[in-house]
Structures are given as C-alpha cells and as structure tokens.
Image (cartoon, rainbow, N blue to C red; front, side, top):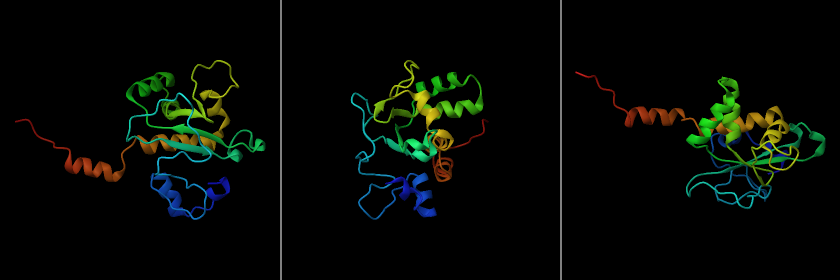
Length: 177
C-alpha cells in the first residue's frame, strides 16, 4: 500500500488495522495487513534471521518518509516486529532503569527484529550502518515511534473481550475455610 493510500482508509478500516484484523482493499497494492503469510513487496526478511515458531505472527511496519527525521529523503523506513519473550522483556526493563516511560519505549524497541531488510543490531557499534536499532528509533520520528509502541501495546495486552472471557471462563475465586 502506498503511503498515500494509508490516508484513504476509512475510520472503520483504520480501527480494524489497529485491532489486527484483515482489511480488504481494491487494486493490486498489498493491503495494510496481510494474512497470507507473504511479506509485502516493500518488506523483506533478512538472510539468517530466525523467525518465531510456526503459528506465531510477525508484522511489517512501514514508516512513511514524511514522518521521519529526514522527510526530504523520500525514504520510507521499514521494520519487522513480533512479540517479545520473557528474557527480552527482562532486558528491556533493565535498560529502562526503573523509568516507567522509558520502559514502554524499551519494550517496544525489543519487538523490532529487522530494520530496512537488515537484522536488527543492538551493539551500538558503527552508528550509521544498517540495522542499528538505536539510530532507527531516533530516525523514525515521534509518529513512527508511536506506531511501534502501539504495535507493542496491542500485541502484549488483552482486549476487553479476552479479559471478560478469561474472568468468566478461566478464573475461580474461592474462600479458604
């Protein structure tokens, strides 16, 4: 989907994308959410990247160039994300050093597995080279960072319906007597 078409989504379609649902779109361009399992034309899997187990989902996020810190480049930025595990969560909290606002950023950054088709790098060495997660986070701008945070929050939180189901069908509170 071209960045121009993103703005053409109806309010209902935009909410469906945020809720992780499929959105049908006319034309040949790939939709904002693809259930087929194929990478979109504008995203690529880096060689040597180990994907999560079968049945898990991964997502490609394309940050429009106009949102980045260098909008004049005309270069959209793309990242590949998926849910974090317990170890990654613990490391993100360590990086946040007890700062609640920073912890959300670190948890969201932990979801990023590839940057512009290159495996994400956390070493901080050789800034300016492909895959540097810290540089990517800075360069995608505040709107891009918010979209990655939104992805994290949507994929790592239960919905109201899931909470209702859990407390209705998978929870029993008893009194010790």
